[in-house]
Length: 260
Image (tube, rainbow, N blue to C red; front, top):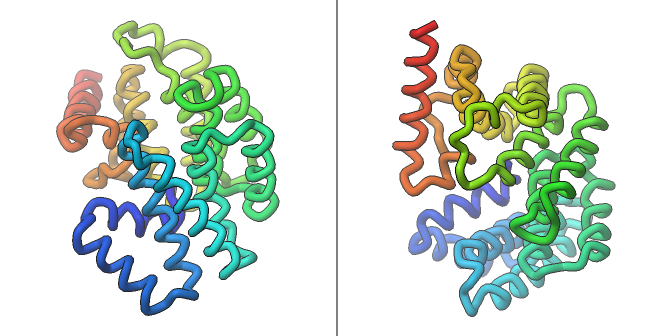
């Protein structure tokens, strides 16, 4: 789900002491390094999003926007600074027109970038500046126009996940047409995407969660065999104990499949 800058920034965010010092050193010794600027910008966005209620939230994002502009200046053909800026725009409450203008810049350079589409989807979600209908319409439109071998047909599954009710105890919810269609779109995407696609494990993990909820245990096991042992993905990262959550779902899949 991330760019390389995002992955590097995530590692820094998880080790703020040594990681932050390493980033500061990088920026000092190589101030004209576009990669360093992009990582710093993403790091700032992740730092801000940890606590959107913080009084420093907007200040950090304004700094991130400045660093995004610097990264874009240093590497004019690189789409990464503009993708990072999607998160800045979401946090700062950019208008739909402003966000759309930035989005057009991104898709003109990287029309099939899964991470960029996931970043845009968050803007359109009901948790931020859109609604369930807007998010799902965006995801379905993108999926319908996805090129061969793309992971974009999985985007509706992320849109559905973002808008599930807080209480998800009704079995029929996960057998509804909307969720079944989203699951099938994601299964199609992972079956045809390159095995080295950096976002592929993230889609597989979300599929595991939905397939277990839908009691499609054998299919969940098919995905688990591809990603077992790696849990740094949605939905587990939303849990207080990601390891325990993942282990529980894996156990349910194994037990369900054993029951036939």
